[in-house]
Image (cartoon, rainbow, N blue to C red; front, side, top):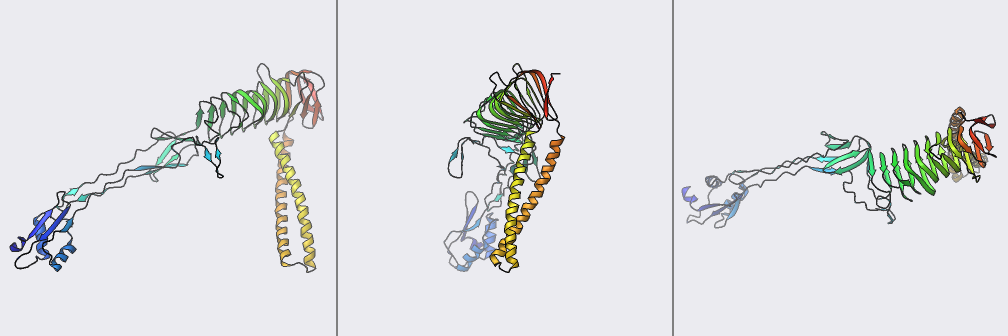
Length: 460
């Protein structure tokens, strides 16, 4: 073997990742065996990544004088760092929304992103482990392990280690800031609702420190507080609405609250509240109030427009010296009355449709009895019978709803009007079925229904 090894050279690359073998020609023309070559490689410290198939090929083909790669190490594979996969937009650029038809909605900028309790916000993807490498001489080449990502836990969110998911603990606005995910129940806008903010839709409470300009929409699930003026805008709230200055609606403003509405003044606007409405002045507006309408402050003025109130109206001055038409209807929840009216109209339409369908069914049944009904008419008869039954089912459902509403209306107490100053002529007052058109000044009085009449009593 010693003679053979003289004709075998092994070269290892400087990085020790490759080993080459060359068999020089010898007088005997002998080729070392696999065992001999393996021994030679071991002597040269080549112990890893040996390609035995290549060695067998060299031996079989008796390859001389050619340097051939016979061993190769493995390079280390670094691990990958953990990362975050966000399920919401972390960069709000305030760009207008492009609609399906290609047009641009400049009033919807998507600056507020709403999330609900339990909603998934971010998946925390753990780091992937690396794999060490090894040289042909058997030395370990350590890999770089992946790093854990820092959990972006902020306010009102939680992390579940089992699912690697971050979820919202409350309803609110989600914001990613300074490396943390936060969900806030309230949002604050420091200026006006205008082209810089676009329309606003928020799941929690909203404070607007400026005005809400004409043409914009603001919808919140919680309470809304406006420090300035509401112009000809649409605003809706699932809670209370407070407007520190007032509403200048130009006949187009619509304010809808599932709670109470408080404003300094309401002019030329449409305001609906399930609860109470409080203001100092209401002029030429349409008001629907399920609770109490109270005109307080120095003026306490209610003039012009159509006023519908569920329980009570309290004001200093109602109407004006010019006999401005002012209509007040008190004693019935306006929302309930509207629902009642809508269902009544729907029932009337159903009755007409049932009669029309019955005519078609009767005609087709006569044809069937005389054996003059073809297959097309058979299908029409079947469809007509199904349609009729659908109408009838809906009719019974709505009549049941009407009965429930009528019970609620009957249980309601008659409303009252308290005048802390004067009611001017030209004011029309309705309490239940009783109607009074004021013909002369009424001072410091209480109005309530007595049978089919409205009684005027001294203010108590």
